[in-house]
Image (cartoon, rainbow, N blue to C red; front, side, top):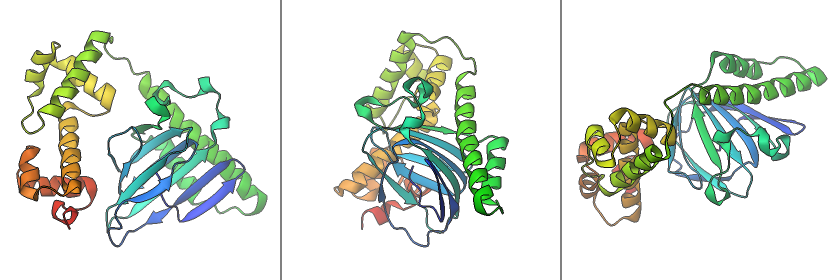
Length: 278
């Protein structure tokens, strides 16, 4: 998730950025080359929409902690909501900071060497660290050493939060259950205008509702209902971008009324469906 900083400090191989943005108008999608290595972003206020290779369109609402691991030449795109203050702190580390076994399994490269992304709720500790980074009043070499040490602590804390979340015990996983979740996702793609309920889908793919619900959360980071909503809006965006259908036609194609689509679309993408058609 690339973010344009207001303040920037280079600390040897550690890069620290923090600041506040207030987009006055919708500038559309902005492209930026993705950092190679680990990027940790704490979104403390505001909302950001982004597109990354090998991922569906992503949306991040504050407070949110985002980790991106990338080792190849990739570009990302971002879009801000006009009039919404965006306050952020971010730290980047080069890939050589880590050996292959140091990167958590949740941040392994995606197929095709694409970047991996994890979004987490921030802990009180990392919020406190961000405040100390933003309000450091030291000068000279003391400032450099303080910011460098706290930036590294910030990245380490984010990785600890990721690891702690992964260690929360859950029900045993079976390949059959994962295959059923994947099948359910495929069926939702085909039936997005009138998707089955969680109970109906569980019957169709052959597992119980609890396992199907937990599987969506584990595999996609979203509940069954959130996945459907995101899928509908992503499909609507693609249709509007193609420019072949009117807004009302797009809405009905993805199972929304035009009014409902307008509200949900603006909340997710920061722009109305009609503005997309211009």
